[in-house]
Structure formats: C-alpha cells, structure tokens
Length: 513
Image (tube, rainbow, N blue to C red; front, side, top):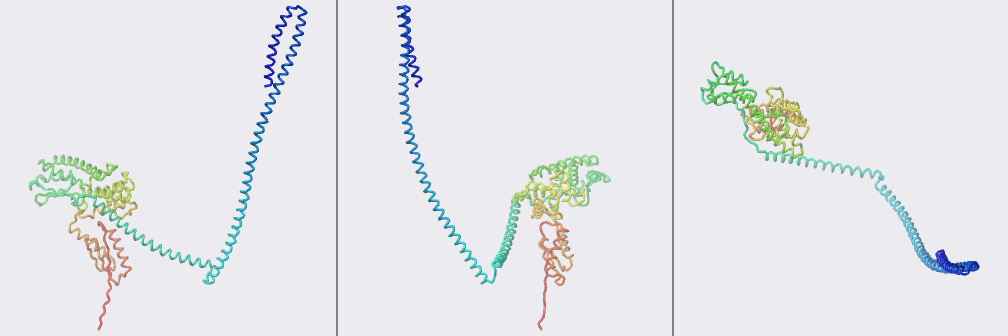
C-alpha cells in the first residue's frame, strides 16, 4: 500500500514538474542564454524540493498505514486470545469430568473384584458341602458315586428298552393295520371306479348252418372242398351228426377266426369250390389282419398307453380271439391297465410303466401255440426283444409267483391280475373242471406224511387238513401248514389266496368203573 502511495505522489510531482518546466522554458526564451542558465538552476532546485515533499508525504502515509494495521492486528490478537481462553476452559472442564469418571470406574471395579472374591469363597463352600453330602450318601447307601451312577443308568436303560419295545410293537401293529386298511381302500376304490362287463367273451368254435344240405356242399365231392378249406386255413373242420352245426378246431385262435369268417362268407355267397375257397380265405385273412391291428390300437388307446412298438400292438390285437377260462384276454388286459393306473396313482408308483406292463402282461399268450414256455416268460422276452423299458419287462415276467417282484410296478401287476381274474363273472369254469381242481387241491395236502384227511371247502378258497396226532406234534403242524401252502403255490394255478388250516386233535378217554 505504501508503494502505491509513493507511486501516486511521484506521478503528481512529475506532472507538476512538467508544468514548471514549461513556464521556465518560456522565460528562458524571453531572457536569452543567461536567463536559460538561471532557469535551469531554478528547475533543479524545484525538483529537489518536490522530491523531498513527496518522500515526506509517503512516509506520513506509511506511518498512518502501519499504525492502522497495528491497531487491527492488536484487535485480532485480543479476539484470538479470548477464544483460546474459552477453549482452554472447556478442555479443563472435560478433563475434570473424565477424572471423575475414572475415579467412579475404579471404585466400581473394586466392588466387582470384591464380589468375585465372595462368589469364589461361596463356590468353595458349596463344593465342600457337596463333597460332604456325597460322602454321607455313599456311607448310607454303601455304594460309591460311580457305582450308583452305573445302577441308575442300567435301570434307566432297562426301562427305556421296555418302553421302546412296547412302542415299536404298537407302531408296527398300527402300521400293519393302517397299511392293510389303506391297501383295501385303494383296491376297493379302484374296483369301484372300474366299469367293466361282468359277462366274459368265449371263443367261437361252432358255426351254425342254414340247413343240413350245407354240410354236403362244405364237404364237396370226395371231400375236396373241406380239404381245401383245411389246407388254406390250417384249421380242422369237424362235420358230425350234430344238426345244423360245423365245429372248427385249432390251437391258433386267429386261424380259427379266419376259418370262421371264410366259411361264413362262402355260405353267404353260395359258391363253394376249391378255387373260390382259396380266394375267400385270402380275403378273410386280410380282413382279420386289419381287425387284429385295429383291436391292438383300440386297446392301447382305451387303456391310455402310448409308445408301444407296432409288433407288440399286433400281438396285443391277437389276444382279442384268445380266452382264458372263458375270459377274453384282451378285455382282461385293458381292465388290468385301467386298474393298474388307478392303484399306481394312489401309491405314488410310475403310472405309465404300470399301465404299459398291465396291458402287455399276457401278450405271450398270443404265441404260446408257436413258442414253448410259460406265457409270462415269453411275453417278457418279446418285450425285451422289441426294446421295451426293463421295468416293463420285469413286471411282465414277475406277474406270476415263480419270479420275485422287486419293483412297485411289478407288485401292482400281480394285484391287478388277481383282482381281474377273481372278480365275480370274470371266468367261466364248468363243474367238471371245478371238481378236478378241488380234487387236485386235496391230493396236494394228502401227499404229506402224517395227513389223515383233507377237505377243500369255500369253493377252493380253504383246505382243512386233519393230521394224525401221534405223528404230528404242535410245532410240526405249523411247519406242515407252511409246506402245504408252498406246494400249492408251486404246483397249482388259482386266483386269489388259499387258506391252509391244519387241525390236530388229541382225545384222552378213560372209563370209571
């Protein structure tokens, strides 16, 4: 600031000097050379005087500025001093408060230490009293601590075992009862939901003729017509004395159906000769092939099963003309597929596998006249040959008792087979076959040593076995019942279950005289 004031003063002096110089120059021109010297001297003295004046003014300005700045600095210093003093006072107050807190905490810590010491002292006294009490108890009971603990544990273990045994037994009984009730409900529900015809189909082996003259036309001259028919169809045509009836005989139900259809077409047409017979049989064969394929497809569609190979579909269709105890095998298979789907859905098994296996479980019966072996083994091999799921193969193979069922689906097929075969009206059996089966059942029981008599009752659902008490004791009777049941399972075919009841009676007779 002082420099700025000095600069302003210098500028003012320069302007003033310039004006003076101008005046002097005018005078010098008027006075000549002498006057010029005088003028120059005057000008120099004036410059010195002006400079001194400017310097003095600058010093005065500087002094004033310094004085003002000194006063302002003093005021600010006083203000800072007062603020510092206030801060120092606050710090002192906080320090005093902290000191009070520290003293308070020290006092509290001392009290806590004293309390801990008191607790430790009390703990020692309690342990001492406890040891004294244990010593007194051991002295009174005559047992050490470890011995008493072992006895208590043994007693608790015994009681726990007894409780657990009782609980396990109760749970097992409840589980068996619940499982049996649930199984019955599932089966009953499935049977109620299943709408199936009670009357079963039978294979048609006899054809009614319009008149007896038709027999001669069927036989033909020197038997040429009947020979041509038998040769073309592979079926035996039996013409006997039965009025208005011709009997067809063959182990192949499809061939028998082809022969029946061809013979009906020949009788309707009226032209019966070897050439016409071959033509009609070929036409009937094509028609039956279509019906077989359509029957297999319709059965799969009705059962809700998809993904069956075409070869298996055809074999399935051939079951339309196959019967078992008068029951249509195809209708039986469809019925089983529907039952299996319901039961599998109830118990959480694979519905698709169950329905497929149930529909195809008897497919081996379509070729039993061509392939040796049991139908369920044949069916399993066919399913395996055409790339069916292994679970389906196992269920087909295990739906009879010679192979154990290891999957839920296989068990379901067994159950459904029993339900479908054993329901009222499912199978037709004449009196002769029934009597023979009852006799076979009694013969199985009487084949064992110690058996006196055997009676098949309840339509073959139970067999009562009377044993000789001198040869069979109570324990042997139990084993005999099991052996008879095992032999029945391995040698006989039957729907449902057969109850084996072994009766052993001992009578002591004495007379009082």
